[in-house]
Image 1 (tube, rainbow, N blue to C red):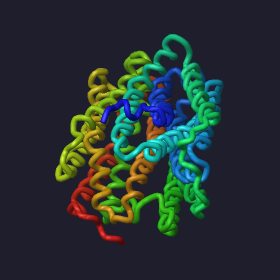
Image 2 (image 1 turned 90 degrees about the vertical axis):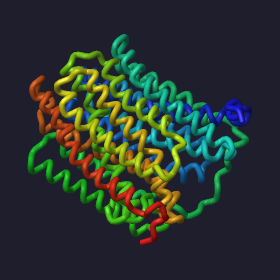
Image 3 (image 1 turned 30 degrees about the vertical axis):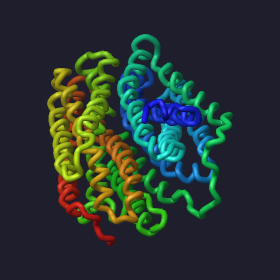
Image 4 (image 1 turned 180 degrees about the vertical axis):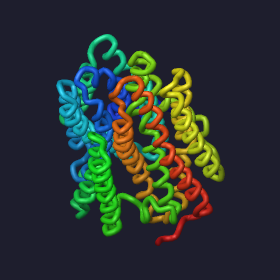
Length: 465
C-alpha cells in the first residue's frame, strides 16, 4: 500500500478538506499565544487573557459534541461550510477588535468553528476512506497537527514582528473562508448521504450547564476578591456538578462514561487524570509568552517557539514509542504523567528567573510526558471499559481534555490576577511562580488518578455499575 493511494481521485478532496480543517483548529491556539503580548500591549485586557482560551475551548466542546449528529442529518459538506464560515467570522471580529471584550466575542465564534472543523475532519477520515487506508489518513492528519505546532508560532510571530497582529487573524480568516466556500459549492458524489432522523437530540441543557460552569469560574478571576471570587467559583463548580448529574440521567445519550471523574472506578480515574493534567499544564500556553517577553525581553517569535516546543515534543515522544506492546501501557502512562509533573515543578523557578533555555526544557518535558502517555491512555481506557462503553470512552477523552484546558485557563486567570500580574516586573515574577505553584496540587491529584487508573481493571474490562 502506497501513500499516494489516499491522494487518488475520489480521496484527494476529502483528504484536503480534513487536513485544512485540522490545520485551522490546531494552529489557532499557538497563533494567539504568540500574538498575545502584542495584543494586550495594543488594546489592553491583561486580566482577560485566560478568557481568550477558555471561551475558545467552550466553543470547541459545544460544537464538537453536536458535529457527529449534524453530519448524520445534513451530510458533511454543509456543516463543514458553516463551521468554516463561523471560524472566518470569528477571526475577522478578532482582527478589528479595539477592546479585549470584542476580541473575546471573536474567540468564541472561532471556538464554534474550530470545534466543528476538528470533529468533522475526523468524521471525514472515518467515513470517506476504506479501513485499509485509515492508518495512512490518520498519519496525514497527525503530520498536519505536528506541522501546525511549528507554523502557528511562525505565522503569529512574523505578523507581529514585520506587520501587525491583526493580520494574523485575517490570514486565518481567508483560509477558513476558502474552505467554507469550497464546501458550500462542492458537488461530491461520494459523500455519505444524510440519514433519517433517529430521534437523538443535541444535549443542549447539559452543554448549557457545562458552559455556565467554565464561564463562572473564569468570571471569578476578573476582579479577584475573597467573597466574589469564591462565590463565582463555587457557583461554577455547582454547575459542573449539575452537568455530571444530568449526564447520569440520560443513559442513551451520555457524552461521558459512567462515574466520570470518580477515583472508585478506573475509567472515571482516567477521565480525572486527563482533566487534571490538561488543567495543570494550561499556564504555559496561556501566560508564558506574555511573561517571558515582559520578564526576559525575548521576541514574540522566540516566545511562540518555546510554546511550540511543547507540541513538538509531544509528537516526537508519540512517534518514538508507537508500536509498544499493550502490557507496557501502565508503565508509559505513569512515566509520562510523572515527567509532566517534573516539567511543571521546573517552571516554578524557570519562568520568573530564567534562563530561557531552561523554560524551553521544562515546556518540552510537559509535551514529552503527554506524548509518552496519551496513546496508551486511550488504549488502556478502552480495554478496561465495559464493551458497550468503548466508543463513548474514546470520544469522551478528547472532550475531557478540552474541558481541562478551559477550566485550567479560568483557574490560572484567578491565580494570575490575584498575584498582581499587571503590577510591573516584581509582581509579574511573583505571579509567574504562583501560576506553577498553584498547578502542582492539580498535577498531584492527576498522579493519584493515574495510579488508580493503571492499577484498576487488571487489563480486563470493568463491570457495569
